[in-house]
Length: 150
Image (tube, rainbow, N blue to C red; front, side):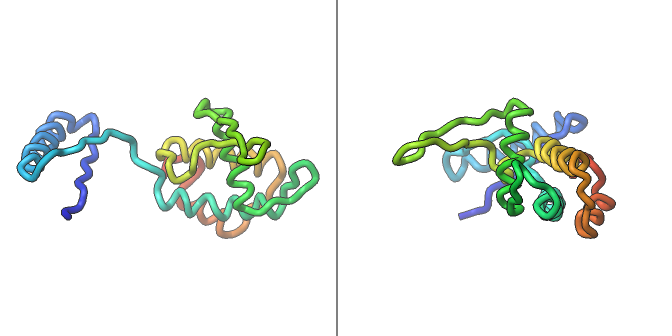
């Protein structure tokens, strides 16, 4: 099976990109049906690498309702918070056997812009709680900057 093709289209090269897309589709049709999917770039590995030191620092220094949480738990808490703020949406699902749980966006499905907004939420929580950012978090900040979308 041949690998999928991905074509990034930018406004300044729109006509050229459309011609390239038409050519890819035409060549692909020789082998059968072609599925074209539109979307935005997903979060980058750099963004993901930036998030984890920040979550670790938050988990070490921030109490929520008098309790500490692991970085993985903070990720869920803060994605839900971001989802509520950004309008992405949060859904209350029934739990099997009773109760309910919140279902919200997965960080792996966020596009670059959305992930940048999530990183801004982490900075906000850190600032509000006077989190002393660790060396890994500071290095990520220096390399990528606050909210630059990388």
